[in-house]
Every structure is written in structure tokens, then in C-alpha cells.
Length: 287
Ligand SMILES: C[S@@+](CC[C@H](N)C(=O)[O-])C[C@H]1O[C@@H](n2cnc3c(N)ncnc32)[C@H](O)[C@@H]1O
Image 1 (cartoon, rainbow, N blue to C red):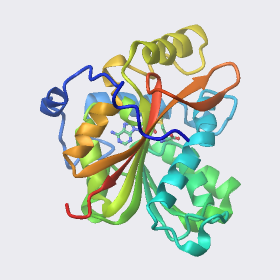
Image 2 (cartoon, rainbow, N blue to C red):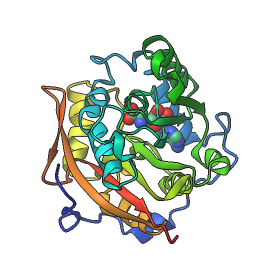
Image 3 (tube, rainbow, N blue to C red):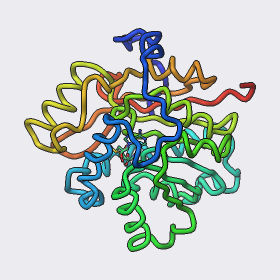
Image 4 (cartoon, protein in one colour):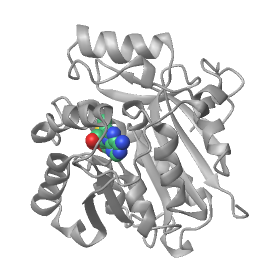
């Protein structure tokens, strides 16, 4: 696994002060019925794929494949913090005792895999059809994990109100590129995190290569994912994410660049973050 040496080459396309100063919709009482127009559009877009969510060869094929690298990334990142019970390290239940929140869990592809490693996972999303798909799959295909997983239709700021500093880890995987109010979402996510806990993020960088492959090739040429899934203005560089998290007392400890091979439906780590990346940041204990 590559270690965090990529900031030197990351280019800041939009000064973070600009990102931080943007006016984002901040509706702390947001519910599934009062989403702002942009969020509503994103969530409905993903809900239109709900029935195909667990089809490995369907429009979510790349997300299924991403588990091959993101699950070990998260697992090893948690182990590296020394909070895993020593007796569980190197076992199939390595995450036993860990409380994890997945923000924007969709149909539960990642949530289930983390529960399979023994974690207690809460998956939240704004799409009712997505949470239905997640619950259906859990109950019908993975009933042995039912006691490890809770799914909720709930915005993260609302969830944070009743779950302040409750989780050992928070996951925001393939979600930031669909969110306008990134600061609001990250701030609420960090609030749910225990001091010393880790936030894990995977997303697309905001670069010409990632836009070309993520939008033009995959949506318009190869038709691998539905048109309108990704947008240039919502992509974000790892440096911007790092700087936003810095303001929330979270120190970035690891950034890995990744890329997707269309022809083999596989992901691999690469030596730069020009395409996509996975990031781990740790919440300061003295915050
Ligand atoms: C590409 S899917 C990723 C699903 C899951 N994290 C995974 O990687 O398997 C993006 C998800 O983000 C959710 N989403 C979009 N905007 C959101 C927001 N503001 N808060 C929470 N979830 C959001 C969508 O409903 C969708 O389920």
C-alpha cells in the first residue's frame, strides 16, 4: 500500500479559503422531505439505480469492485491506530468491537463488508429506496450480519445530534463528489467521531484526467454508469479535503492514489492522486 507522499504533487485548483467561504445550504433540520434541490437531484439519481444496486455486472459494478481495495484500506487504517483488540488482529473478525458510521451508504455494499469483519456498522443515507435495498439485501442474503448493522434514512447533521463522539471510525466513500455542502457534511461526520478516531474518504480528484475518465469515458463513451452521475464542480482535490479536515482538528495521516481499469473492472493503487484517492484523517484527541 502506498504511503502519504502525494501532497507535494497535488495542485490546489480552488484555494481552500474559497471553498470554505462558499455559501452552502445549511439546513440543520433537513429531512428526506426537505432536501435542497441539488441534494434531492443527487439522491433521486442514485435511487433510480436502487433495484440494480447489488448486481455486480450492472451500473454499480465499479463500486462493487472498489471494495477490493477500500475494505483493506479502511481495515488496515483502523488497525494502524492501535484501537483493535489485540486478540482480533489477523483474524477474520479484526474489527470486532469497532463502531463505524457510513455516511451515504447507498444500498450497503461497503457497510455489509465492514460488518463481515466484525464491526458494528450504522449506515445512513437520504434515499429511502436505497435504504430499502440495503435492508432487503441484508435480511435476505446476509442475515448472519443483521445484529451488526443498522440502516437509517437520516441526514448526517441530524444523526450527529444524538451520536456525538460515538464512533471509532466514519466512512464517506464515493459520496463527496455528489455533495455541494462538503464542509457541512464533513463537519457533522467529524462530530460523530470519538477523539482519536479516523475518518476515511474515497472520492474523485478534480483533474482533467479524472473528469475525462469519470465523466466522458465512463458515462458517455462506455456507458458504464448512468449519464449525469459525476460533475466537475463537485469533484475535490485531496489537498482541499485535507485542509478542510485540518480546520476540524483532523490530521490527515494517509492518502493513496487509485485508478479504475474499465476493461477488467478492477481498481488498483497508483503512485499519484490524479484520478481518484483514498484518505484517512485522525481526529485530534486534544480538540
Ligand atoms: C455512489 S453512492 C455511494 C454509496 C456507498 N457509499 C458505496 O460506496 O457503496 C453515493 C451515495 O451518496 C448518497 N448521498 C448523496 N448526497 C448525500 C448527502 N448529502 N448526505 C448523505 N448521503 C448522500 C446517495 O444517496 C448515494 O447513496
